[in-house]
Image (cartoon, rainbow, N blue to C red):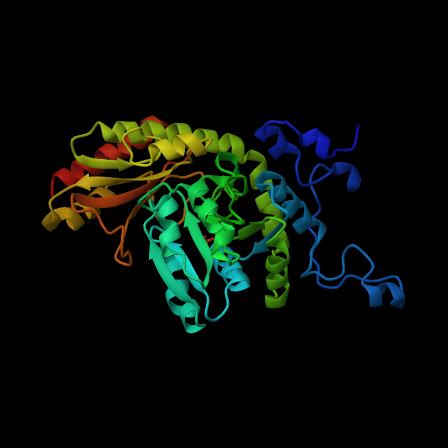
Length: 400
Ligand SMILES: *Cc1c(COP(=O)(O)O)cnc(C)c1O
């Protein structure tokens, strides 16, 4: 069997790459999967080698064959120069922010951002002397008007968390990287929803792509991990921050995420198909005010999604129609009547979930006035059962 190399991947489809990337069996006795290496100490053959650290692996926090296999797989998917593994998706936001931002810098954060990111910015980053402004997700090239002489980082997330607004990523990176600013602005993107299979941020000028690998790469609601992927220009600072802060990926979790990636393509196809089916079905109901799903032609931002994204994953939201006085009570009745849909945070696992969305920390894209916002993750269950479950929810809401 020929050794795998870069030319093998050239032009190969995404499921082929998912099946083969990251680990070369010929490099480890032919075993299809990489070993799970539990390690702190790595021994050196002699003191001269130790002094120069002249061998591939030197210490457990730096890298192991397990973390290397996962990072190589992500670099292949993202087109990145380097990947770091961190203990959660939230750390995949906070660690690069700490890597690139210093006291006196200004950061622009999208208003529809994953809410704990906002908390990190408003507390720790502000305490460290970083100035924060939030911007409208649909700002596009007008981001230029918000860039100040000390702007150092622009954070994007598309679709936005819970409210699903699309962003014109190319327009933002183009403005951010104009030499006329006289400043090197880093554009980061939380790409958790699309995964690199449906959107490749670095191809659109983003410098640093961020993932809660907790979600689709894990796929089974049993692992918390994050990953960050940088282009060549911004890789050294990211790697240095990781080493300086003492952050590394745990061996068993790294192994499980690589395992999850192997099936992520076919899982996502199923999530996509089922979620779109449910979204269209919801859109036709009188008790639903709006369905917020970028792949629906009715959704503002659909054109951007269609132009830039290769697919849609299984998470979207809808507004359960209600007057303001009853909206909370109706949402609770709806959610409490569900059986297959669990009430729980996170998503990306095999099971369906529902969450009442709280937008109280938003300053621009605030809560809807035509009812309660509910977020769904459509899992791998049979669609007829999920619809029956949702029907029960609507019946309970109607009885309020
Ligand atoms: C879940 C999520 C995160 C955080 O991931 P954790 O592993 O739960 O910390 C970050 N960004 C987005 C968009 C998410 O949905």
